[in-house]
Image (cartoon, helix red, strand yellow):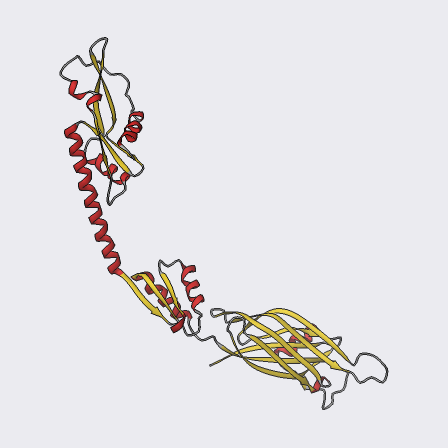
Length: 339
């Protein structure tokens, strides 16, 4: 910005005080508005407003000058800001010698603030830490998302070729980010999933070798309360080793001789593991029993019963998922941690 444009801006910004007592004509001609000068100072290191704030605390913020009334030959006192910021530069308004001293003050302040900032930047750079972390089970993207969600002041760079995340930032933040990744970068727990099929019969119905194993214990008592007049037998049992990895697909399929050779199918996927509560979340759990029918007359040769649900299985507890069919077959699931 040219000095003439800035001068026009500054002249428009004059804040005349209410007229004070006239000053009798003395030797004030050197302190009139026409003798005010303008110096443009362009900061090299600090912001203009920062320098103005500092300068006005170390020297006087306003310049006083006089305006002569030609009719009475008396002078009126006027004041305006000594330092004015416009478009990143500082206009210094004052008389010659005072303007020179004000400009020198701004120069010293600018240099000292610049030196202080350079020193602090060097100290911050020296305190920065760079660490390379190689997750074993977490993906690189999941590791970065974890750091971002926790709000750590850490820069991250992915290095897929070596399976690493490079962390850089203040020592405390980098240390906490690395510690969190290592804490969560553990192999997912392994489970043994117990699945039992329990069929019900009237207590009056006789048992034979193909009826199944009579159910005993707390589960039998609970089902008896639910369906009085029934006895319960274990018709089939399946086991599956599985992982708590998110979105791990699980499946069981097998025939059940005690259900006349029916086909049992279970399909589901893991959606989360709560370490503190010891609960495994399963989503889209699909259970199906397909019974095959020998017919002497035309008609379907099989019947299918389905059940879909979401589950939360607690370690060591048996969960009755539901029942299938008109003569209900109950499905129970239980998980145990595998060391």
